[in-house]
Image (cartoon, rainbow, N blue to C red; front, side):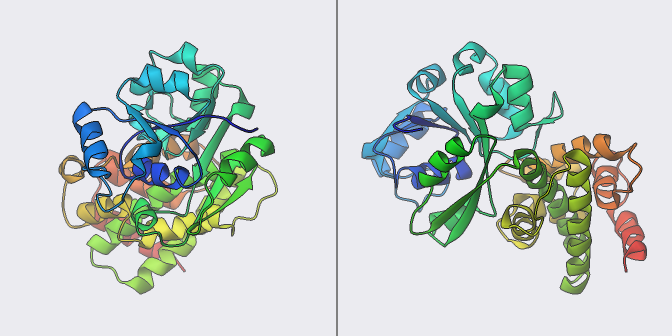
Length: 330
């Protein structure tokens, strides 16, 4: 693995943060941005006018285009940084072009249509070789990358040579990167933590305090471990930052869109009105349905996944659900 060309697909907060990170190490970086207006703004101001506006971008290194076909053809490695609900809509006309590419998902959640996590979806529905697929996971918020606060990333891959190559090009004075071969475990963990973050937001919106939230989070961690073990049983250290660290930052951070969404639900917003108020996609909303379908016939109880599903999809009162949760904790 060397001298591969990179392309970042997506110009939201996380896509912009990844462009900043990769441009620290690469001489050239392809970037798919949907609108000419946004492209012109980036070149003119050396900043993304819509997201992470305080980040100065190395535009001399960037080949920006709204022609997705062009960006795919120019890039050996595609870093996917668009919300999971829009991945099929983005790539469905370019399946043949993706066959020999390396697909690295920096998105979280599931594909609504297939109800698969992103790596599985690209393998089963796009025919991408498993050894050509990877993920980039946290704990890491785009807003802190923008501020160059020390952050840690994990590259999940089946091929360590690919993982080492990606991680090398992520590292900088403010980014540490490690490699794991537990791609399924990490990807499901990154999906579930968004569900738990919604729950914590709901509890906070209902007026529960830090003492209660800490107990809920600790039990969510146990449920996370159980879920991953039932999906993919290998030896792993759940205390690694890619699992528990990512859960913690998403449940307590003010930057968490899933917690913000949950907080609105707890304060009385309907799901529809809360979704319309959010400027970014709430991955945990879609993930909760997927996780519920996986667990509903399982011999184990997944209290928190099922609780979030009941609130978001069945319209059951958040106050009632959280009261029931509180009576089962110890």
